[in-house]
Length: 505
Ligand code: AMP
Ligand code: ZN
Image (cartoon, rainbow, N blue to C red; front, side, top):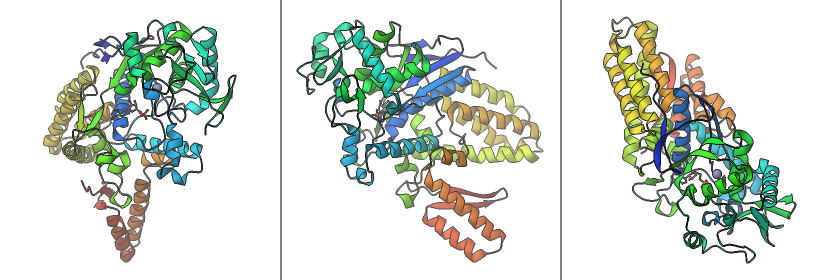
């Protein structure tokens, strides 16, 4: 095998592809911004989460240890936070008042529900779990303490309405986004509802005083709630320390969110917050921005759910493959065609996997030279991933490997089949596109609502199998019909029943 390649990623801070150099050799500690749980995460959000997942998998494939933290924002993300001034309406409160919000008694229930659904989708798309998934609402005390310290150090001040970070007090503000000129920054935040007590229009909120807010906590400044940016500074520090190796998120987070995180964290510690900053370009659907209005807005369940639950029966790993088929830093256009092509690949991977498993059990062929060629293709895939997550090239190498295996499956002997199986496992660990790493039962237990269709289908398939074994064919046929209605096709194989979703793409 080739020596491990150097891991290189584009760094938004330096505008260059640079080696990732963990502070502690061989141990990558990184943070990726998670979603605001006021609704289901969409496939664009998942494109960003998948970038973090691929960073994790590549680092581990290179033999590194990882500590990966990604949060859940379950408070304080206001509709106008994007404009650097926490004003506007709380997304959670707005969601509660919407049609979908009618079934929740309060914002807390709403946040809990969508957090569970996030975990279900996370599992469905075969993303690895972070070491810690902190929730903003569970770290309010640390956020209050951080705001107090920023005031003490002269980086923040109080007005009648809240506490603000003083941008003028931090020299490096604007370095990440390139929005450095004072007029430019003022321009960017000009249209926000401003607090007349603010000293500088660029200053952003750390705490909002609001005794009427739906989610509020008691602080030295009375009842209120934190600004959005402070939560990530605080949670990254709580679990990863003052200095981290890498921080990731979607491209919209460069400014103001990450710019503000740097200002807060570095003002608190006097140290460099994160060495590497990685941002994912936005996903578009059929060449357009995703929008509910234009009917091209997709959540994971819109695509992978069965027809009976309003989904389109797409194989979850086909969706994963489609979402990672473009490099994270290039504009990505998600299309039906990409999804269909990905579904074909994933189906073929599975077919070959079954053939390899069968050969491992009984293979009598004579081929044992396949190993070296597979190893070379794995090395090519890993080198591509280490080269700024070049997924198209890595996927091409994997497809070539499966082609090779498909062509010679009849010639595999038990030993070469076992080698092929190990290759598939390595490929799957790197890209996660062949089989789910967590068994379904575990996925279901993780989030009680995990892929409810799949849990139900599994139960029906097992029941049908039992009915057939008991020669109750009428019952078995009735169950088959029920499964067909759910958009599921059952295949009876020598290894027992298998099922797949009949795609309605
Ligand atoms: P939010 O819930 O809005 O805080 O977003 C969660 C994550 O998804 C952030 O890292 C965003 O930058 C990212 N994100 C939002 N929309 C898209 C998109 N269309 N494509 C890629 N990433 C996105
Ligand atoms: Zn964040």
